[in-house]
Length: 276
Picture 1 (cartoon, rainbow, N blue to C red):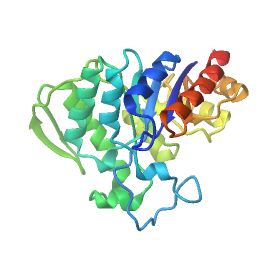
Picture 2: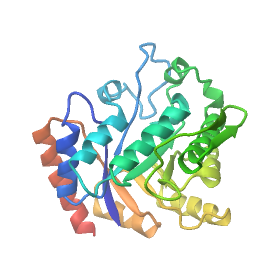
Picture 3: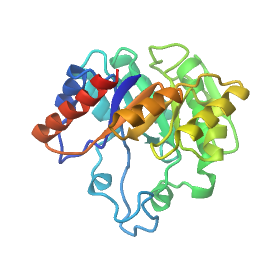
Picture 4: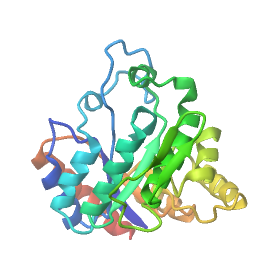
């Protein structure tokens, strides 16, 4: 079992460089950073967690710039997005940003993506919420082409890319792993079609994780790498995930100033060490 950290890096918490160094020193193998470009003040979409939207959602730093800063203070820490809101992003810029991060970090990118839940946020990016799923599927096909082909092109219902040159290419071949967030039928179909790993949230039962992994195996995706996002830090839960075939558990690190963050990381590292 591997252990990582999921967190929101904001202007009010520990800075990226010290955080990356602290994670690597404590034996965590990865970090997954949340993304929100902005939060429209209308607040029409209900927060999936219930209640008021936590303050960190309003203040997230750009995940790719943040991960690049973390790459400079680490040598082995895997650098993940958890999740990048791909439908809200330009596909060409995103292909270049991700490939650049993979290059400068020596091949450490884990590209976690999802369709998003904040409908007014995506509308501000010109995205029809009802079409964000099919859009994202085509975006991933186009990004893979830009990552792997010297002259890349794609022509779909939502994404149109004329034959183009786009460098850099990622370090890893054929490309960095794409982790799909989400547990809906549409998300799992997308995972089966174009994903390399699964990034479910911690509310799923062990039986449901086993069921999904078995279904993916029947569709030609056996042993899909599975990373649970923001899992409880207790031994019984970790053991259940291990039995269900999960490869990595991430613990949620609250967004706090540096001293408080380091204390919390010490606690989480002790849980991970006992579970190994």
